[in-house]
Length: 271
Picture 1: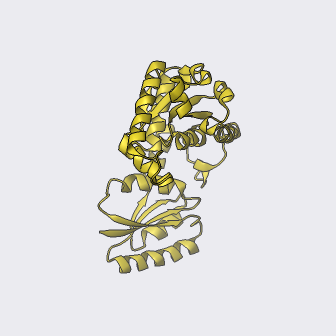
Picture 2: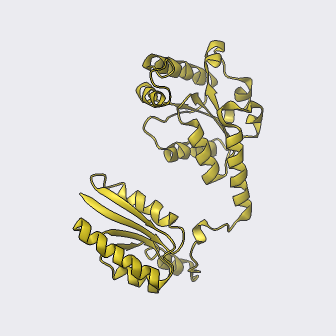
Picture 3: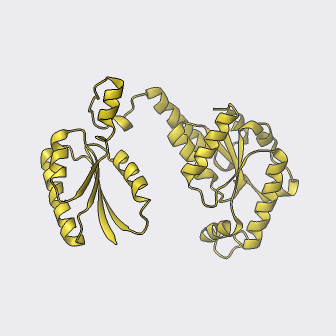
């Protein structure tokens, strides 16, 4: 089955896309062709879009799905008249919230992604710079300034998780890749041990790691299944001796891994 999906917004469309993707993920038997339509902020643009909706319906033999975040009632009305299955994401929540809070909504587009708190925005930028400057253990002397330090074998998901924590939560995240030198010493660097309360280990199933490393260095000893198994075994032993939480990244998304890290930091009183 194939259906066309339009993510429509008066502004960037990030909210419509994010929530729409979450809902569509429950229907993995359907092949969705995704179309992004930000800045539909005039009636003329809305009418032009309804023509595209009609064309998609004729082409697919089924009306397209529309996920929209429209605060302008007149534009939203034009979209609802189109040949589509229309879901207005804001109207389900804004009015009930307004009634509960006893406050009228501003109905200003782009508010969810605007820089409404400059201090938090600055914190996130600084955290991103920190994560990039302290990737792959480049500055172990900076671990003491980090909010969290991820430790694991190469290609276990450390870098993307650090960047996600920085971008979305403003956390200064650093990481240390476990190397042959660490395994030969049978010890983690002293800079890691000194911040044990901030450290989380990342592990991964050996066959999954083998596939990931094969994409990076096909046919190499580094990517061999035997090497992957050995690296993971030694990593488990070292992290076990340090006594830090170890998260399995094999089948978890970056978002899920980050959520576990945040929960661990809160439980330990670090965040």
